[in-house]
Image (cartoon, rainbow, N blue to C red; front, side, top):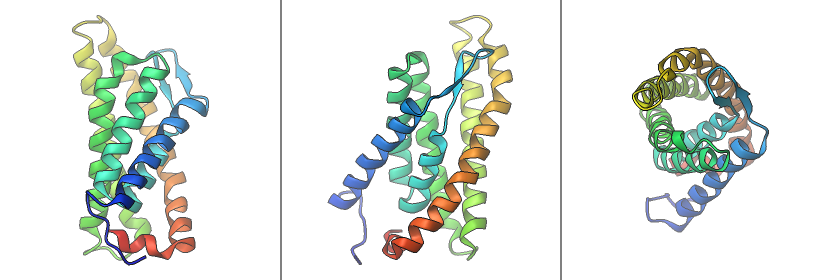
Length: 183
């Protein structure tokens, strides 16, 4: 398939819908690990967000990451996090996808490009949740302490997502070499 995906192409819409569902399922159905100290949870959703963004770019990463993760928050009973998740995970997916494309001109090594993109995009997620939880602390006193405690968990979530996503991206590109032409 040599067709370039554009924002209105049926293929891009289908891939975005599939990854939105995959992200929702991974976060909500692979048992998330509760973090009692923060009233949040550790999950493997970052992996799917990174795969979506690295393979199909910033639009798929942003839309699927933001919507899929926010819906998971609502489904799992963390609705107060859903608005922040929508924006934070959306930005994370967009940054990972955009950086991966921009770095393609300078860095030929796919793994190195993915690692840099994910670390920077994942840092957006870590900082985003820290700021969002401090904002929520205005309404829920004491949450700012949780925001600080959650930073290492969010960093771990990012790193686990990175370690799992990069080999998946390589495998998909080996099995479906046409995926490389989408970006």
